[in-house]
Length: 122
Image (cartoon, rainbow, N blue to C red):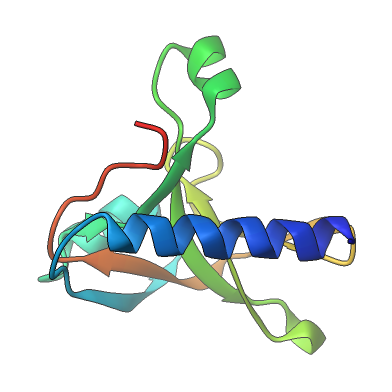
C-alpha cells in the first residue's frame, strides 16, 4: 500500500473516530484563507475546530500541544483531499498526502463543530 493511500486510510479512520466521540454534534466545512482552523471556526456558530490528533514529538520539543485539525484542500489535478491544519506550524495551510509526498493548500476548508471534541489519544 502506498504512503499516500495509507495516510488517507489513517486520516479517514481518525476523522470517523473523532466525530463518533461526540453525541449529536453538528459539523460544517468553513472556508479558510491562510488561517488556523481554530481561528476560522471561532468566527462562526460552529465555534470548535475538529481535532484529529496530537503530534507528541512537537509537543515535547516546543512544550505546547500540537493539535492536528481536520481540513480539506484542492490540490489541482488530484482534486479535493482531506488533510490537517496545525495552529502553530505555518497555520495558514492545509497539508495532505498525495503520490508519496506532502502537499498543501493555502485556500481550504476547515471542519468545524458546534461542540468541543477531544483529539484522538487524549
